[in-house]
Length: 139
Image 1 (tube, helix red, strand yellow):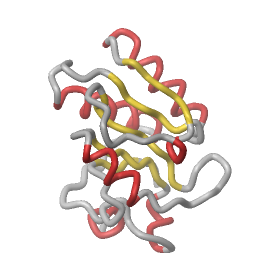
Image 2 (cartoon, one colour):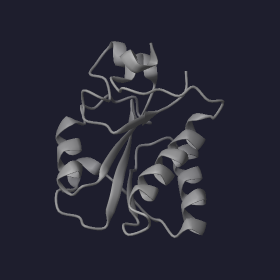
Image 3 (cartoon, one colour):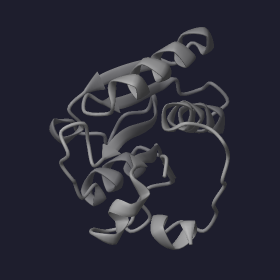
């Protein structure tokens, strides 16, 4: 059922909270490049506890966390980008279709992470349909 709701081929059901799961997703995309790429862009509209934990986990690993508005960024040619982390619905309750941004991130060989309320996928495209490589959240 989780695969259906995320639109992704693999699911894991752990006891992690959403913030920790997002930090683990950051670590996964960082490890894909073996440290050769060390920048993760995080939406300024992720939940504050998620952003705080991502920053805490990134510091000792040497991961550069850039926080901003992903809708105003062009990710298509960033050679240092591990990936982008966004929230759906975001801290303001806005649901965004991240398909175009996922395409940009993939052009730079980065990875897209969508942190989401899994049941919100019953109202809009799944993270997989939007091009996410990883989706995490809590239920």
